[in-house]
Image: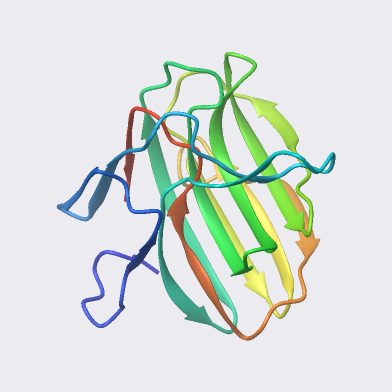
Length: 176
């Protein structure tokens, strides 16, 4: 599924950033500083401020992207994200985690977990989300051909959910 090639797919923003464009099948975003989607288990920190550019997908699907991000600050990232509602969602990110570029995933079911998985250095990784019923798989690849599983999980979700790109992006993030 290429979000930007299907003219019949309605694309919407949650938290539309001030600067963004789609050109030649690529999305470039400049997100506000300190924006994020994260519901802290400790409670006081609830963030739902990051840009999320999405469409609706129904049933089983595969969504793949390649991320190129100019990491400057801690937690700068580009992510693939799925969302059932405000308290049920998940994201797979290429993130500046602890000032080292890494693959990180977050699954939120009323509270968010945070799972840094692989330190991969400054590259342009491919990210993939697969859905089969209410089971989801997160994968990454350095070449778009050989995939490593990051996480497999279940979210109780309706058949039709929001899917797209987003996360706590600061700087320029190109997603195609």
